[in-house]
Image (cartoon, rainbow, N blue to C red; front, top):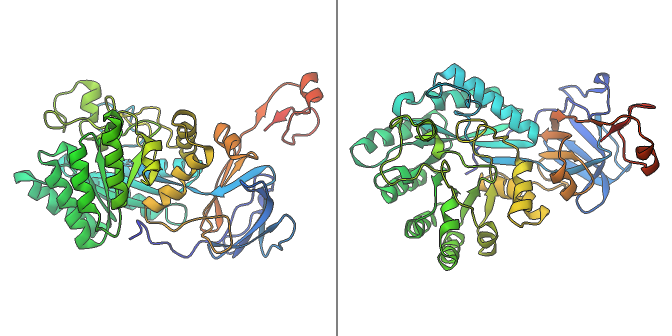
Length: 452
């Protein structure tokens, strides 16, 4: 079951970076023409959008516009990115003294700002984990759900309910709260089995509840226990809505033959691994601040259970997993919270790190933050072809490798309309060297010296 139900798209209302405000398509427009975009296969094309889908793709200059036009000359057009592992309830809280504020208004404000930041980076769909239980009860979940409603039409935000304990005497309260979370609107069942006294029982409880409600599962786990992962794979194999686990840094600490066997089991069960190349997420926030500040047990894990991603999270063996047939998606994890005070929440940075540090080709790396991420979230595939959803990202550049290297200027299309734009201009003083080498420039008139 998809995390969020696609709705009919809003109409286009924004032009490309070279058009004046007077040329903005109105909110009532029903079509948009993207002109002169370069595709990864080297073609330069026009792309016509309508009713939230790609209506036609043709050679540059071949398509007529029914409404607005966006000039994408100099831009590479890609399927939009998606964010499969965000933490909206703790986002932008790194400078907060003491516990992260849990009141609804504060969480909603930060969750909304974080989602817009990630949308500006190119993620038109987000899956956010929200803690439930303990002191905050269901307040953080309620706040993220309110942020989701306020962002409708700009970005699709689905919410994962993350209880702390689900087994033993305390687990009954956690299970009741998890059921309440699903009634409130959470669309995915999550959690941190490694922090429960009975990790296997925790995972089984989550899987049973997800099967009962027909929803997806997304679990935080270090992945360092191959026997536990094998049991999870067996139990997850029959869940049609899908199971994702991450960040799974512990897989990188296992012997290669054990990792290979585990990868085969996960692939056979259809379990997705969501890695976090930009830094881990502190185990959904449970105990993360205590680990960093030295505070006494602030919701910390039980003895022996790791603070996920706070200490040495390990390196996910991405290439080995992919070779075994495991779907590997990449998420951002922490966005400027205590687990990563400088987290960017940028899917293109995640792809850049997969390409530069994990040995993936640029196409494979971008797939992890786009097609694989969307599949992990139960969302339909996107291609720059007629009939596919109009979820697109235009990045200044003419190759994917170049876009991942210097992905500054971006135009984001969601449900057929431009919803975010970032324009970056690099300027140098006038130089005879620049003129002699005929370096690429953005138009700024004579003597402007603006280089894209």
